[in-house]
Structure formats: C-alpha cells, structure tokens
Amino acid sequence: MDNSIILIILIILIGYFYAYFDKKDYLEYGINKYLYYIALPATIFLKTVSINIKIITLNFVMLNIAPIIIVFLVVHLLYKTDIIKHNFARTLIITSTLGNLVYLGFAVVSKKLGEGAIGIAAIVSGIQNIVIFTFGIFIMNIICPYNKCSKIAISKTLKNPLLISSITGIIGAIIGVELPDIIEDIFKEISNSTTTLALFSIGVGLYGEKVYTANIKKILIISFFKMFLLPLFAFIWIYFSNEGGIQYEVSLIEYMMPQAVASYIVAKELDLETNVVAQSIVFTTILYFILLPFYVSAIKLLF
Image 1: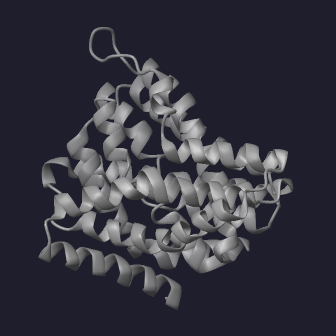
Image 2: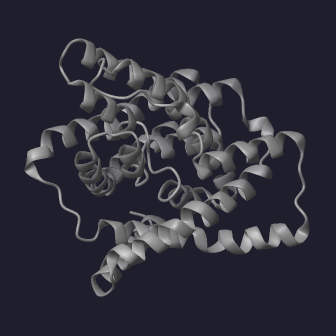
C-alpha cells in the first residue's frame, strides 16, 4: 500500500478517535455543514472552471453515464421480477450509484494523480450526479406502486450545492471565465483545507456506527452493486473503448468509491430505508479499504 493511501487512512482514523473525546453529533454537523455549503462547492468550482474543456469527449461523457443507467435497469428488472420489493428497489437506485465522489474521491484522486486532477473529478461528479438525480429519479418514480409512495420532484434533488458548483464550473470553463485575483485567492485558501477536513469528517461519522444483522442481506446486496457491479461496468467500458488518459483513470477511481455519506440525507428526503442506508455507508466504506489492493490492480491493468 503506497504512502498516499496510508495518509488517507490515518486522517480518517484521527477523525474517528477525535470523535471519542468530543460530542460527535455537534462536531459532525458543524464540519459537514461547512464542507457541504462552502468548502466543497468552492473547491469544485475553482478546479472545474480552470479545466481544459477538450478532455470532455463523447466517450468520456458516456463512460460516466452508461454504467449508471445499466445498474438502474438491472434494479428495475429485479423489481419487475419480484426479486426485491419496491421500497428497497428505490433505496438501491440511490445506494448502488451515489458514491463518495467528493469527500473521499477527491482525496484519493488528489493524492494519487495530483491536485490538477480534482477538476476532472469534479466534472465526473457533476455528470454522474446529473444522471442519478434525473434518470435515477425517473426510474424511482416508476418503481412506485399507487398509494404506496409519493412521486419525487427532480427539481428538489437538483438543489444540491455540489451539483450546482459542478455545473456552473463546467459552464465557466466552456465560456472561458477568469476569476478576479482576490476571489481566486479566497477559493484557493478554502480549497487547501478541504481534502483533509473531508477525510477527518468521514472518520468522525464512522465513530459509534454499527451494522446490524437484521439488515445484513440488504447491505450485502447494496455492497455488491456499489463495490463490484458498477466499477465492473466502468472497467469493461474503458477496456473495450480502447482509450486512455487521466480523465478515464479518474472516472474509474471515482466509480470505485464507497457509498456517499450524503446518501443518508437523500434517503431521508426521499422516504427511503434510512437505517439500511446509514449502515451500508459504514459497511461499504470499510469494504473499500479491504478491496483497495484489488482496485489498484484493476487500475494498473488499464493504465
């Protein structure tokens, strides 16, 4: 295991043990609110607006769309054949595709490929989130028996500040926006602490969380979809497209991320199985570091 991954694990562990000595709920709420509304949007916008827009090819865009849609269709098929029930199917739509692309993903990309690659990671995050919160919501509304669940308005999910910053950053890159020096300096100062603070918050969030055996079957299904099936589809797409480059490596790294911490908030807003979601966040995060040697080997096969 290389030093960059060891550093990431150590920062997460520092957050985990720090939560033991402080009030976790208060600490976690404050850090995540700052990250969610200020630090991460500022970092995403800054890194995205300065990206070379030529890297956004049709194949790159399709790589960050097709595997997600294939997973949606597999979940829908499982629902239609009565293998899984409607509420878990809706939960699986979110948990199997909404990865920790920002908190953990940006850190891994930054440590492995350099700060400059965060802009590409932000574009990847933006494209994938748009697919999840449009086509994914469409499928969730189909998987909704009459009088058993309420329809979801896409407009409600598109208010995500991380998604907004990604889209505005991409638009800014396309039209060639140049930030005033003072604004750029402020964004850079905020950005400098974002990765470490995001990793620290993951550790804080993991403290005290448990995985209960009553939900283990659903958690294992979520883990299979998120940690095996989705990255496999992305790997196959890259392999057969016969294209390389840093943007494809970033995309694959992001596809390998565990379930997003934010999926718990999404689950509450969309009336999904919140207990299962909360426990699967813990399980897939731990599983990610167990599977990391396998993921590293898979990346080396392609790049």
